[in-house]
Image (cartoon, rainbow, N blue to C red; front, side):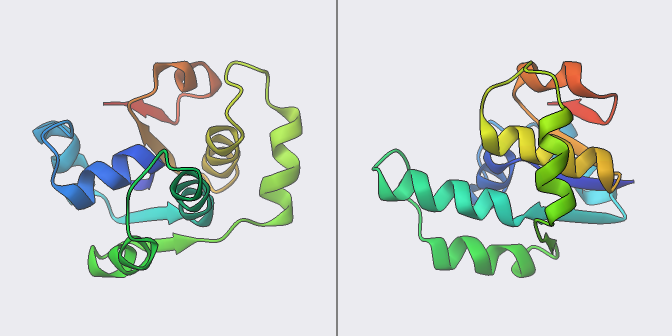
Length: 125
């Protein structure tokens, strides 16, 4: 299985948070490939800048490789696919992650139930 972690799941993984269940950790461990979208780093940068998140962006970026994950760039095709998605969710970062998951294809691991209606590729944890 190929996984794309949403921003919150990636943050929980790096922090070794108890919010990330053993089952979710096992899924991550069993995955053939795990990706972190550049959009997640962008989201964290914006939230850090406005005081909604306190995280070292350098450590976040370094955490991708240190965790054995791969960076998923945002392509023009990914960005344009967002327009075709129904408005189940209004968060632009989450919508971009869904578009990436559909196009690549990747299973998108998230704790956000509002993302589930988009695709069978969305995995709720």
